[in-house]
Length: 140
Image (cartoon, rainbow, N blue to C red; front, top):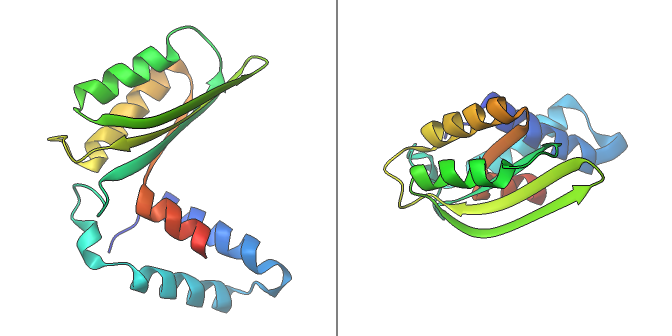
C-alpha cells in the first residue's frame, strides 16, 4: 500500500501524540508498521479507498464564493457531497466535507490536484484524504 509523505507524516504525528512521553522512533515505527499492515492492500487501487469516501478540509480567510468554487469543482469531478459543515470564526473560514468519489471517472490524485488549484485561486488550504486513512490515523 502506498501513502503520500503527508499521510505518513500525519499518522506519525498522531502516533507520537498518543504515545506522549513513551514515544521513541522504534515504538512509533512499530505502531505505524502494524497499522499499515492491518490495512487491506485492495484499498490502494489508486482510484478510491474501500469505502469510496474522502474527507475534505479547507480553511483560510473568509471571502464570498469559497463554497461555490469548491462545490463546482467537486461537481466537475462527478463526486457526491455526503455531508458538509462550515464555520466562520470572525474572518476565519473552516469547512469539512465528506465526499463519495466512487462515481468519478477521475482518480484520487486528479481530484486532489483540482482542489489544490481551487485552494491556490482562493488563497486557502485544502486537504483531502481517504476516509480509511483518516480513521486509521485516529485509531493509533
